[in-house]
Length: 269
Image (cartoon, helix red, strand yellow):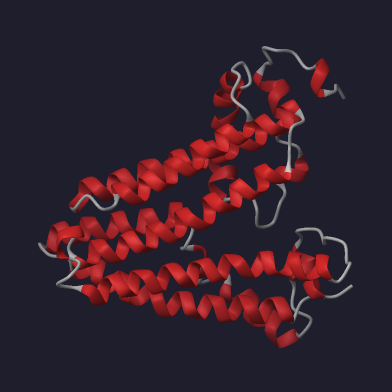
């Protein structure tokens, strides 16, 4: 295995994959998004190969990820199909940058706590801003916020629930660190509830995985589907139903996530 100093300045795709996409990355239970396995990790080395030839740091790429996600939320404020399509395209770009920043860091050997922190800032802010943008879309756009404040409130509540749900995972790491415990591997065995009943309920939930729809990509795709349906019916009924339904589902996800954590090995030595 070559060190970062010995690696070629103009690597091949095969060389990049060997170093930047090891099994430890591709096999992560929660940290690897389904788009990574489906197509993103197939595309990202081609962009990473360009990035490692530039002075851009891995953290600089992470900032591009954050900016793309923020722009996705701004794009969703454009009414109708145009805004929904912008949201989908920009969240795809966000995930591409998200794959590339880690690859650049692994190739150059520059992984750092700053990069991890920025990555979390990106995902927390992007997903909450997209939820808030959905509430504004349901209200009829920025100009109609005052007339339909209830939908904006629902969007803000959804944003808070998504932020809380993401924070639960970080609370586990913080609690273990404060207790002087080592970080556990990101595996299904560790996350499995110790109670047989809870384990069966958790397994059944995989057949209706609504808890996965709150990632920026899934949420933007659902918003696009709602925008298409709105265009067919001629009003905002579908988008308004969507934000109304997502709030209680998100609350259920938070409760389920909390129960899954406290009933698993994640908070134990």
